[in-house]
Length: 282
View 1 (tube, helix red, strand yellow):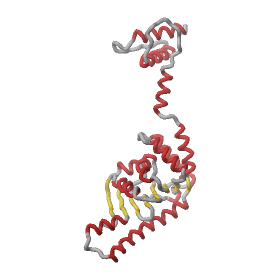
View 2 (cartoon, rainbow, N blue to C red):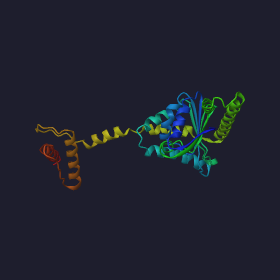
View 3 (cartoon, rainbow, N blue to C red):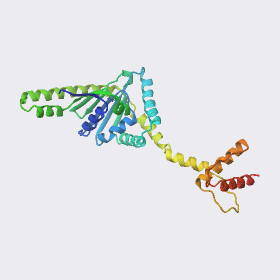
View 4 (tube, one colour):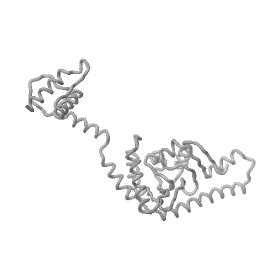
């Protein structure tokens, strides 16, 4: 029972969410890898708390390690397919701007531990990185050190412990958590702060157009057909404009185009407007 342990998928995430939500003041996270998807899975449970994130793997050289970490975070962001990634970036940017979150790089010191600390009384020690795969997909081992363990132990064995024994058990938990916090704070203090560098890049990323906006702009560009005054009464609808524009591009580039469309889709209308455009161009 001391500590509570597991060796399964998703349990680490469940324990982090449950115990982070109990926190009042500060969350400490140590991991080998950090992604915005991983942050998105736990961000709600860190609200109204200071968050300190210590990231590091074995990467020789301080400058090379720092650059690699920022590039890795941005690479995962560029390749991510999760629908919440933009909101995750907005959340992280806001937390940094409000001085509620700091992220440091300890790669040059070969740090690769995974540790999740809540205030001064709860520690989750395990193998899961702060990533989508670490939290959702991979089988990860973990252990929870928390006063709740003692409470559960006593409730299940009411007549087995006296006050002195309970005090010793609580002291064991407190001592172990305090040691983790002490080590974390030492590594955090000596690491390279990348918070502001990351903030600049995330702000630039948010300046990119949304995929939906890019799609709409592309459609408008594809449909852009010069207006030519004519007496033809039928005007092309949206999908017909796309096909007219594409046919005209093929004619200009290759000297001809073949348009294939099912019955009722308006081949006559499209053919007529293609002819009108070609006539206007001589």
